[in-house]
Image (tube, rainbow, N blue to C red):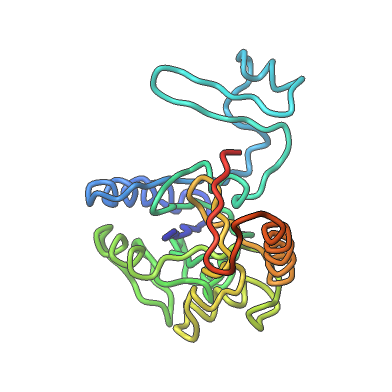
Length: 234
């Protein structure tokens, strides 16, 4: 999945950029999803049937003729819901604490660049620039950059790639010192997908699952070494 994170402080224009970027990518024929992070204590569901149900339920799903939503009573990580988003490109607005994908910085002041993670930034966008970072002046150029250099690491922080965490690997990829393929959490030799999205796992878990499955299959009539495909509707 291609992914980009748009970060900036309040009133910087990041929401406008996220909306415009999603529109451009969709117009180019790409399936796009978005994730928005907010510091508001709750989502816009107060004084609704959804809100009343959420007071007693672990999760609440809401459906209308034109849209659907799921509300959880507690926090969830972005990677928990990525399989539900079903997209080629993910546009993330906010979430400065995330460090598993490249960023576009939307600044009010050049000094904000370091605070917003310049080491993960591919470029800046908007009227304010920052020293040492490329600057993009139109959304079409942003879309080109996302499609060529967007990525999403699994945020396992397993260290199998040789880096201490996914943030360090993401910074190396942004600096063109590594590629997303250097992540060791997803391999073609043992690949699990959920809703079409690869399920990341550290090498130890991968070896454990692969060995267990092979051992069980070896007890079945007709088994022989080779490529194994298992389909499961969970």
